[in-house]
Length: 226
Ligand SMILES: C[S@@+](CC[C@H](N)C(=O)[O-])C[C@H]1O[C@@H](n2cnc3c(N)ncnc32)[C@H](O)[C@@H]1O
Image (cartoon, rainbow, N blue to C red; front, side, top):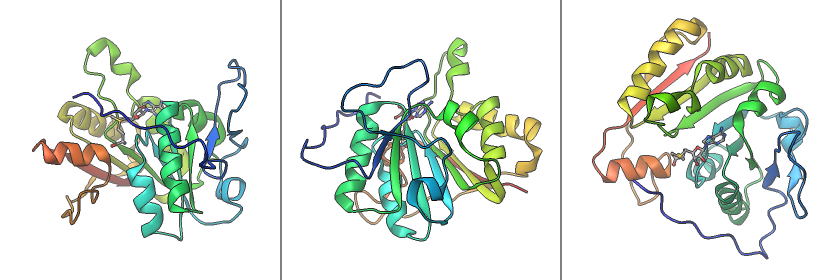
């Protein structure tokens, strides 16, 4: 199913408090780039406080970050989105809503987790509806893979959560098998319930909304690091 187009935020909207950029060392900075991410991603470096930090990988249009940061003002939220226009769109939602506990990074989550998130520091990692990469030869591009599972496990504090939801049964089952094999510290998967939706944006993410409206089953699970 193709993604619906998104509008660029108004140029007058100030995104400086809600959008950071992460470029690989070989990419040169461009004029007008947002501020770069700090060397170490923590609540202290991002929000100048000590609140628990939750990271969402692949935020898309930013529905989860916008609603969750309002629901839980005692936590900080960082979304990482590799497609710049989506990162900007999500940052604009946060800016318009005046959130002080949520920001977006435009960039690739994989090297950020490998090199910039301190071990044992995170309260939660969220991955919702990652791109399925259907073809077998493309599976290695999946955002939830052997390396990222190890990275998430390392980054989480004991008791920290990893939420993984998808509408792709094969992705769901193979991830559960992989976690059991390589990350036993995650323990057993805990099913997460579908919540009643009370209004048109009352879904965890846009992709959850799209799947539910099209009667597509969604597989939801959470792990808690031992
Ligand atoms: C299918 S969309 C789902 C978006 C959102 N989570 C939702 O459920 O509505 C997956 C998103 O992950 C982003 N993505 C893919 N690889 C990524 C990576 N390595 N780092 C950050 N974001 C990534 C894609 O650009 C895309 O916006």
